[in-house]
Length: 185
Image (cartoon, rainbow, N blue to C red; front, side, top):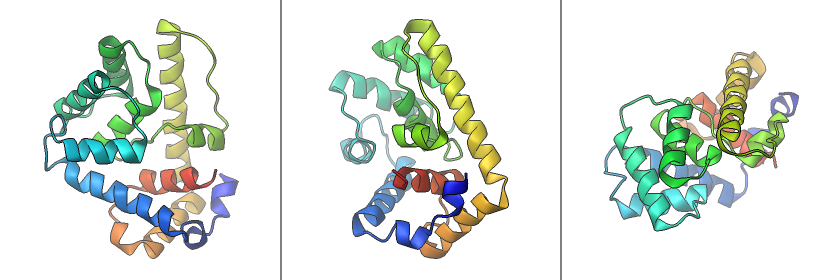
């Protein structure tokens, strides 16, 4: 947490391409509830580009149908993870978290930069053992965010974000911290 508290948000996001990332996220989230994401190719294209979805059409069909089916619901990480696994045969921790975050922006995103910054590692395993390990790691990510956002120092970084990006004050505190972790590569 100490690394985050020393961040100068304005300097961290001073490059135009970093601001573009924030704008792309805002566009995705503002569009999400206005379209059927299972069929809206423009939404899928933007989501795929932003989150670097590099899976085939069959996988994407499953993913976006699941996303659409769960609009206005609060599914768990485990439920989504298991559904994707059941329908695709793949254990997709990162994409599960991105789908979950789109449904509920208070839920953190799992990616290699978050794992790296939080000091979390996965181990080689498969099947049910990997599913259980993945759920456990995600629970640790959620717990870290909850603890971090309860501290004044980290919460202050969300206020700093608001001061720099006034038009994006509506982003959840979780997403603001996610952007900071993602930039701290």
